Length: 574
Ligand SMILES: [Zn+2]
Image (cartoon, rainbow, N blue to C red; front, side, top):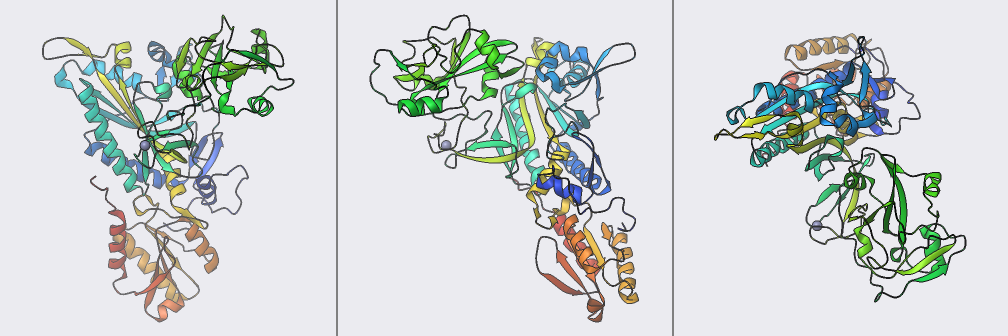
């Protein structure tokens, strides 16, 4: 490809809102263009990368036994109502009406549609297992699209669905996919960490995410360096520790004039925050919920939502709290009735806590559970933090950030039961099919690859996903010899099947080298009067500082060898 003909010019200016590295570089390299919030066009260079990602994914899915098919984006809303997932996705589901006023949804995922397909085509245990996948456009109405291709509303996703006769079968399918995913990331030059995750609106029990560790990542990961426990903070557990505070003493009222927050109360009464109980109010599907948690901890809203089995959860506002007859700032679970009380299990981790007094400017000392108040439910609803104990080995937990580049779920039978996806076993007995689902967002993967492979000058593409293999860069094109050598080399490299971006522009060396660095093509080949004088060309890897002069004679074979070597970064067999 001649750069003079390439659609899209590199940019100097980047919009201020582009804070994430991959977003900035994708705009500077003129690879994407925003059409609406979270909706992007891919220009030719980015589209080449996306197609290569697609091929790698397709190869690994096929190798694992997957069969590719294609399902529509447009889906009847009734199908979603049958499983109740229209409510689980809530506003995230794009819906529309057709001219006959039939309600439709733009698929955010395809479990419903594929299960329907399986019902038609699977009757017996002999028809199982199945691994079926597609690479298809998905729509999710994200509340906050951000980070360029990191969080978008329209995206290409590879989604595979597994169908098995039992849990053992599901585990085998799941492990096959874990291995296939690992292979994909290695081939894309992405070291990933497998972490436990929350299933969210997809549903099901176990789920894992593949994370690329990156400062810009919007997911917090809690992990243990000792035993390798790792989980998304939404899911992570921790040992909260006991707060020793003596034998339970009688309740005692104490005046706390003007003290409303835990920080203020704990400073005023000179007790650590861990010796207090905090009240937090939520609205769960429109109903007020009273949450009690140890004062030094924060509520994990994902855990809380899972426990409440609600669709919508948000913090209650002051009017809603006061409207329920609660004294804001001094709220106490003691004496509360008619409101559901959910307590974090940390309330059982000590004695003689300070809690609200349910009277203005009043708190209570020596609050003990369950002596002084009842909770409708006591469970782990706290946000795990670095420094706390590992739930597996007791070691000290650490925290980091990551970009989720893959999410896999053991769905079990909840969807097949709802939709009636059954099979007959060898004794003629009918059972629900055991399901799993496995997703990779391609645009996100592209962005993560840049997050992981760049420097201050631009992108450094790993060879297997680079838009082109070689950046051919003749300097001083008025020098007819250099120009002639470059034209010949371009033709020869193309004939050999190498992908060449040919910088045939009449630009200064500075401009050309800057663009070469920005676009991140793995190998740069420079031809100038100086190299011609030595019957040579200069070869430089984008990832390395030093270049080397090599003879023009045999350079095509040499470059071909380098490209093949770069492409054959094979997944480890582990
Ligand atoms: Zn551990």
